[in-house]
Length: 66
Image 1 (cartoon, rainbow, N blue to C red):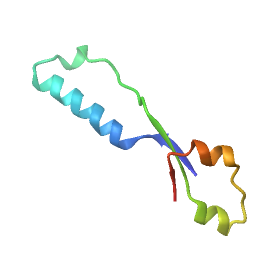
Image 2 (cartoon, rainbow, N blue to C red):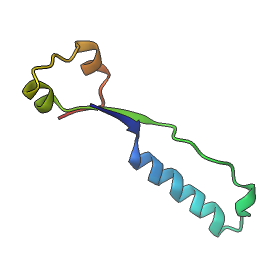
Image 3 (cartoon, one colour):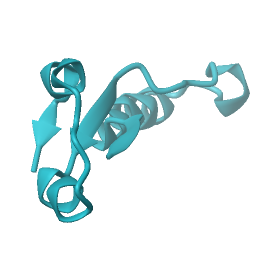
């Protein structure tokens, strides 16, 4: 199981930052950006191999089940 920032969204946010810099924004004036979207990924194959039961509530909240 993994919970962390959505990397695709991080790259999109970074591209916006670069765009602002290329349009002449001063780097010192740009705000610090934090992750705005997170994802939960559950590896069911590994959970089953370890004999773990994943609660259905976690499965419903997961963005991706592998």
